[in-house]
Length: 199
Image (cartoon, rainbow, N blue to C red; front, side, top):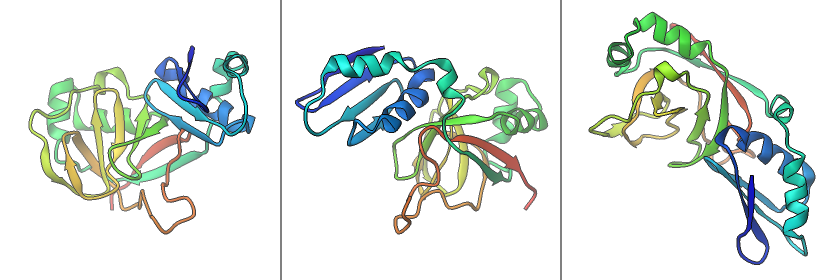
């Protein structure tokens, strides 16, 4: 991991994407920082007062793979695997639709970082065979609650919005509520399972 000063009271920690959740959790638990912002392969930390880069490096060294196992809640989201692109995903992967569903729903994902829209949480852990590129032509409108995959990620669109990911299912679970104390259902570090339902 590489720690670089990022202004007067901030540092950017570069790390392997698989280390982001554990690093972010460790930084939050340390109570040294006023803000911890995880991204794909970085964690930005901000603080008040004085804090040396050496102290942050010391904290970073305490992060181990075992830390990852203790990160986040387990959130189970009921999903109807009825997405517009499910047939195409099966064709491109060489799997049957039921195999795609079994593989996706049998995986425990990790909520890595938020982006694109409020409550849109990029979840990592997508099995290699399901890692497909974004659609060549994005849709103008993807309905809120659409379960999608692209590249190494899976996510649920929290709002009606444009999007170019492969749609494989839908959920009625509200992913973002601006009036809630915790507006986003998922937080970085949460473990996520998609549970198949028929209705």
